Image 1 (tube, rainbow, N blue to C red):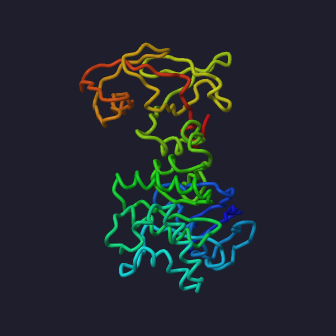
Image 2 (cartoon, rainbow, N blue to C red):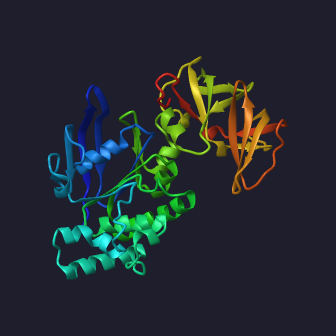
Image 3 (cartoon, one colour):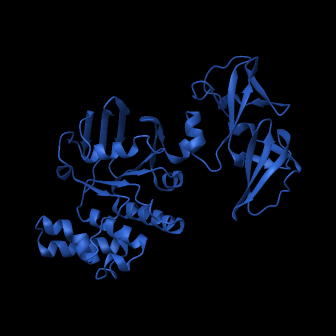
Amino acid sequence: MTGGVSIKNLNKSFGAITVLHDIELEVEPGEFVVLLGESGCGKSTLLRLVSGLEEDHEGEVWIADRDVTYSDPKDRSIAMVFQSYALYPHMSVFDNIAFGMKVRKTPKAEIAERVTRAAEVLKLDHLLDRKPGQLSGGQRQRVAIGRAMVRDPEVFLFDEPLSNLDAKLRGEMRAEIKRIHQTLQATILYVTHDQIEAMTLADKIVLLNEGRIEQLGSPISLYSDPDTLFAARFIGTPEINTLPVKLSVKDDAVSTVVNGVEFQLPRNRIRGRVRDGMPAMLAIRPEFLDLNRDGAVTTEHKVIMCEPTGSETYVALQQDESQIRLKIPGLATVPVGSMQRVAWDPNEVLLFDPGSGYRL
């Protein structure tokens, strides 16, 4: 059983402070949608409004074509998985997963069937007799997911479920959650501040900024084609390079100067009208800068930091009063203090209005 979610003109305030502004969102049945943003952006509040745990708001919430705006959480056909596992330590894995069904007086045969099916999907079938204290953090999180699964909801709601796990377990659980979604084809609304979780899990990312939807779309579209400077900076590691520049426009050709070197900007990368002398924020991702390679545009910079991470190496170089960063595949040693030539790919340059932050 799976259904979509429709959020219409949703506004939420706490006293005089508005935390969500005119939220419009459509989640298709079976879609994995991640609500991504900084702490305090409103993503968890939005999830709680969908669940019915938060009230007193303007707008409508629909689940599986039913208006549930004023329905109790138990009547919304949802299941939630929280950052806290909330397992009963004295109960076995089987009893923790089955607890809600026992409270609702579900027949024993049906309980056994649902728990067994969920345990097989979650690879918990050999752990059903164990207590939570005998499980790893990842296994406990899978028990919490199993408890949600046996409700057979229209929609799963995840509120930062991996925040308590270390980096290794987070990676493992990301893969598990993706596998579970592919197996169940379930509708999932998932809250996180972690861009890697969002990029690896989502069919669609909803990027929130101060209670407003900054941009929504596929992970690739947010990364490659950001609408705003905020979106460009939020997605990507290391962060996208940004430099203040002035544009030169002659006979519809657009160019700028970086580090004393002029280069042409492809017109198809510019969305709107620009004028001669217009200030702009030039942005380019670190992977589109190369060391010691001839290119259409080559500048020279002093190396101020080299950070090997194993699979790739981050290099920071001086650029006027700031710095630019690039990344090199594999391990590399670039001497700090050395002068290095940097090749730019003009086809990967983005331009933003420095005032509004919107794409030019």
